[in-house]
Length: 136
Image (cartoon, rainbow, N blue to C red; front, side, top):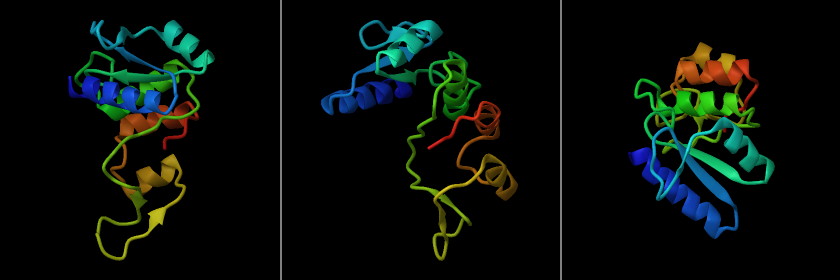
């Protein structure tokens, strides 16, 4: 339920900036979100709206999916141009140390995997890589 609340907060912030948004979830929350529909999500995107997926497993209804994997799955379903990842980490680093680390401006999915980075889970990375969807 926390990801639904986060989705609504993100929607509110974007709409205050003039960005039209829709929140979709895998379960019914009619007061704040519409049920997930691939066709409807694509239609919203075609109209210039941002679609935010929230709820259990980021709107998949599957608690075994991480929010990263669910976002990558939904992105691949709607042929998204990118996955935008909100996190409390401000980048991908070359090491786990707080001292003397360098931030990557760009990194490939393969390099993330080879370095053992935990920026996204492996299934999410695989979905994004196989569908050529950059993650930001």
